[in-house]
Image 1 (spheres, rainbow, N blue to C red):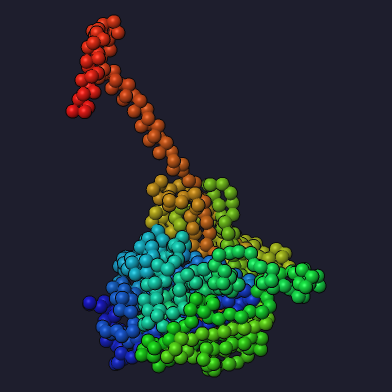
Image 2: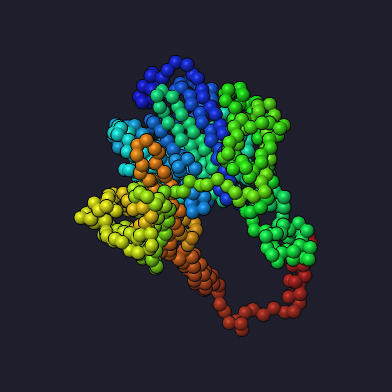
Length: 578
């Protein structure tokens, strides 16, 4: 295969040797007494070459054919509770929103050439991951200006972003995802990734980050999931729900009126008290032996539990000693020659490590009524008590949401809830201390979506409310999905908190929205067809009878004797048996 100019140059500058670097890791972090975050990370680095031992050649081919220097693919579903769980893992850098999301940086001589490569990349990944990425066309594509690494000064690269918020995520996406790993999910921490257990979580995210740097290919695959521990254990122990016998009910002894001996039992509130669980209970099996990994890399996979060691106890299979043990984490190196399991026990499982709060709590929801107009109401609340927070919001709206630019307004509230300032995003007011920048690219019907980016600053402990209105457009009848009355999914907004250059940006997404559009009566064509067919059938039958039949008076019919009638009947009966 002939590599494009970009890859030919990288290949020529690549250092000698085809050394591969691979490591994988599993982190388990109790967020609350009920919800545990499990984080799977797989990192692979390989020299750019025509021959690959570990690196998936299919991904290298996709990069080469599209002339992309990096690509990022996300699959996600569920809801991340930032109020109770804090900031998303890894500052949200590898976390997905709802549905499927793709962005890439492509080298090309012109924008049309880069756009053609972008569509080719989306089509290739669609077949590779059994997803509907081929539906990412110009009506779903934008070029971010201030988020997702758009601040890169390399002007020879074009950044494209597209998302499909209505795309369901299931095992059809997980299976090809695991095929990219060196052991194909058969050994190491990836052996715990079973679709039945992963997709029953309350929130989950799968990501692929692929880039070319310094003559090497870098691939990072991350899977995050929030497990409801009690619900997970209940499904393992009691797959068919049935009432628990009285003797097995755990009573809350802290209640004065709770006396199990006298038949008075107040059930214990879920998420508190004792817990005793193993990896096999959570994932259905232990970690399979890493013999496959030992042939690939000298780094043994690790599993780390981020827990206060004073209140929790962890026991490994074969009485293996932890490689790292501190006040806030316990890490084990998974042996390569046997299966590995962990037993986790705590008398007070609600005792968890302090969570890193999200610098901003963001929410966005639709407002308005009727089928003609609507609006978006966004709330950004600062959790910092000592310094203002600056952030960029990035929103992509379908072309059938016609945004009114003059309706962009904001209102600032202090920590006590009193209104402090209000204003609009007009050209004369966009340079205020709160709303510093507004980028708006209007949509073109059936060609491109609306693209909105805002640079905002919130004083410490304050709340900022932004709002704008839009008009709903009518669609052609064949543009509606099969479940048109359900509504249309709108992509979540992306929020990036600005920091100094030495620290990474915190990235998180709002929830997706469901927009109701004017929907025609799809049954009307069928009713018209049925009514028209009935009328035609009645008219045709009447006319056909009039044309083909001959009508005579009864007295004009020739008369037959009784003997002739009997002979005719007899001959008819005889012919039936002959």
